[in-house]
Length: 118
Image 1: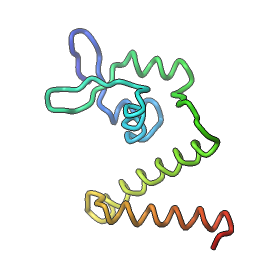
Image 2: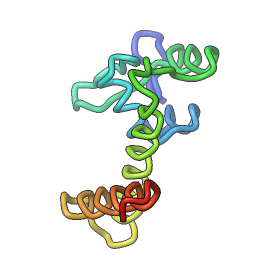
Image 3: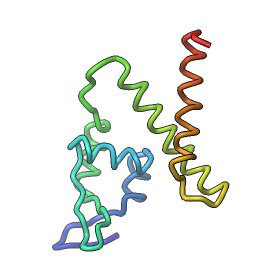
């Protein structure tokens, strides 16, 4: 934990763990403008404990759904992030473009199979 001007700040890993989400989900929420971390001079994100408690108190972060498929797309993004992270640990790589592309193709193939397009 870090304290800046009497504000308790959490690393992205600790904040994600408190919320029960993958750290990539916090990054996605930041891109959507749903959460705003504090940036350190090094560029690292730190999340105010008050912001995490706000999200926990409201029952979680709710993005504005544009279409029914948004939940499916969000799940696919989370699975891709988890699989990329896992493969990086398994193979000792940092999850390059080829690994991510391979998992995207795998997910697309599974979606086609589910729709009966195969």
